Image 1: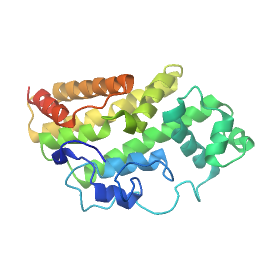
Image 2 (image 1 turned 45 degrees about the vertical axis):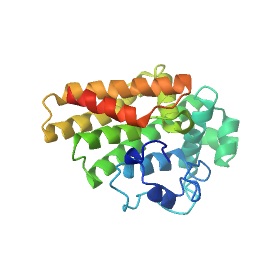
Image 3 (image 1 turned 120 degrees about the vertical axis):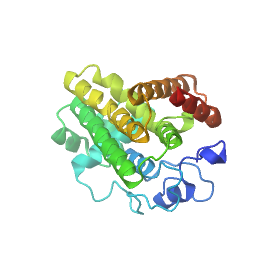
Length: 248
């Protein structure tokens, strides 16, 4: 649960409890039994504060690593490891233990660790796009405040709950060595801005492209600072600052 002013508690706690992503008694986010790909879709699907009655599309009680093909299980397990281990420390042994498969199964599907990591990041980007479009289709943003709160939901505001940001920064850094992956990451980075520009155009904002560029760059800077210094951000102050930037 995001701590701070209740008026900007961006994830409906009851909805998160139904996904199994938070502890039913204390409301704290938990990682066990759920993979990163489930987390990203669930968060994107219930990101707006008015969705308190909506059921997340990824809700369910089964372990998401059960009953899936070995290749997908390996990719999911790799993503789960990245927030704590980074990309360069991922090994066959680590992924084997996380996925519950033999090292030989991993090398059968992926010739190298580089190939495994690249495809894991592609899975993350595909899930991100699917979740983003699902969220905005299910409940279009209807005000500038909705835009700001939706953007706040998608970035890290607390170092203790920054798994997705750690994946994204690891992915961005890793892609610098792979020209093809770099192009794909560049396309992924444009997914959210394009959709926010369309929203602001629909809302009649005078300079939607400039406003979105400013918002996204500011939020990425905030996120980098949180990861670098390990300090959370005041959500009330952040919301006010973003609304002020949007109003310029």
